[in-house]
Length: 230
Image 1 (cartoon, helix red, strand yellow):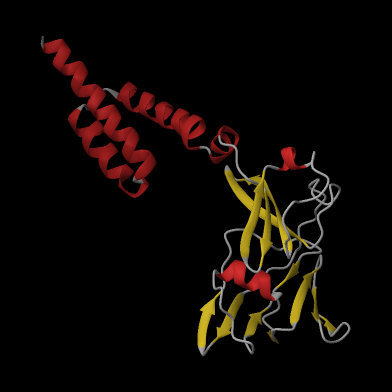
Image 2 (cartoon, rainbow, N blue to C red):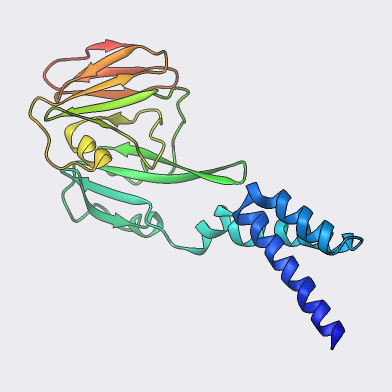
């Protein structure tokens, strides 16, 4: 009877320590020191097994790479006027000659593992071809410091769930602005202020857009030819 209660207690301590280690890392030392070192002082093997258990859980359960492979995710999305007009799994769509629905551009989502984490990147493509979506991409060395949309007198900070600094990506045409900002109604005279990778400030109008390069970017206007190279 007493042995049973002791085992239950030790399992409880192990469970609390494991959960705390994973979900409340800031409290890890407090829980570990108080419960393990104070309550069951001398039973260091319990702490050892707790750490091993935490490691297994992180690898088998929390590892984003494992989660990604367990769930089928759409990785090719067609955008029309800022809204998703078709979502596909890349391997399935490659059997289709061309998309059935109209679109302004499409995003090709791919993931790169870094430091036991998954970083989602996107290619922004204006024309669908099978060759274009075969993950033939190159990551740019630049990254803008800040992007602000000025729309109807309001300032909206543009953030994206994906890293779009891929060579060749064309950014900030109206449909892209609607999609990335989640705002469907744009002022005809909206502007975008960008603090670039060199802390220079540029302003884009509704007719301007950016093309990402390896170590730089270019700005273009739909009303004119190439505007400038930065």
